[in-house]
Amino acid sequence: MGKLLLGNVLKGSKIALGCMRMTALDDAAADRVVMTALENGIDYFDHADIYGGGESENIFGRVLKNHHGLREKIVLQSKCGICKGYYDASKAHILEAADGILRRLGVDYLDVLLLHRPDALMEPEEVAEAFEALRRSGKVRYFGVSNENAAQIRLLQSAFSSHLIINQLQFGPAHTIIVDEGMNVNIHSNHAVVRDGGVLDYCRLNNITIQAWSPFQYGMFEGLFIGSEKYVALNTALQEVAKNYEITVEAASVAWILRHPAKIQTIVGSMNPDRIAHIAKAQQIHLSRQEWYKIYLAAGNPLP
Ligand SMILES: NC(=O)c1ccc[n+]([C@@H]2O[C@H](COP(=O)([O-])OP(=O)(O)OC[C@H]3O[C@@H](n4cnc5c(N)ncnc54)[C@H](OP(=O)(O)O)[C@@H]3O)[C@@H](O)[C@H]2O)c1
Image (tube, rainbow, N blue to C red; front, side, top):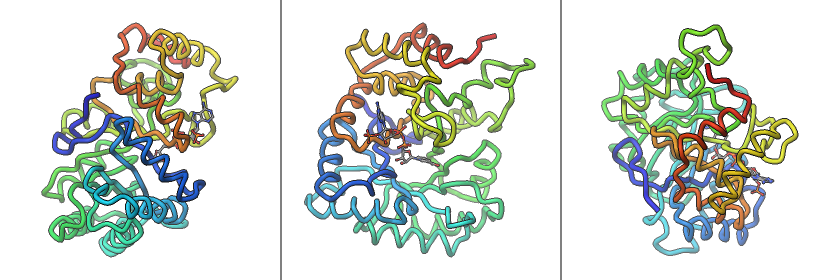
């Protein structure tokens, strides 16, 4: 099935399961979702302290408790820094948030902790102090960020002596900003606008793994492009690829993300065991260049 080496240091599956929507499940259903992911080669789980106000981590913690030894078999990641009405990347908040995450998950350590969103009032030295303290105490093994541009990562990295290994960004067939600018250099086009400081190439150059969140959505939580009337051509192109490889349209969408040579990890948020099992097949698919570009164009993107 093949694994990724995130940040060149941490082994994990090409697909991660995002647990943002786990609050919709009872404990038995959550157990089925986690077991299905594992049976299909997905061993990486993404959380955030705000998902369901902490309830997603509570539910996941009860699943872990019911399966002796499971904690050591998985990669566990969570995020902090979003509060109601403001962002908080202060040292005190990060330390307190990490303790809350560990308590709710019922574990001694996290494999990865990410800053969920850039905080305009962030002091890089404070974040670095918090990260160092968490690393030294053994509470967190690795660190990263989410929704950050290249300069923001560089700023934080300048104060932090360990390697930031992850940047979680929205990316998928209907949200292609990180690749658009690179194909439209020096052109008068909306697609040429550099919105993230060249974050894709920055991450590749610095061994920072990009994790793609909300792979099946368009806009920011506007809806699913799969089956949407707004994306007829994209759905047709994905259906063709899906038919060719005998996979689902969701798996074809994930295969499109995984085809990028940056070795992007895809965080899927399905809480449906059947859908998860089908999506997992994307881990064995390698799309051709022609298929990748056909999907890109079908989403309404131009090539100069
Ligand atoms: N860093 C950030 O700022 C950030 C922001 C958002 C999310 N995330 C992370 O990314 C993860 C994934 O986000 P997401 O859940 O928005 O991503 P997603 O995988 O794009 O969407 C999952 C949702 O789409 C539904 N779905 C998928 N295919 C479908 C189909 N054919 N028909 C009907 N419904 C379908 C799923 O329903 P079923 O459950 O029925 O399959 C589920 O509700 C989150 O869990 C979280 O870990 C991070």
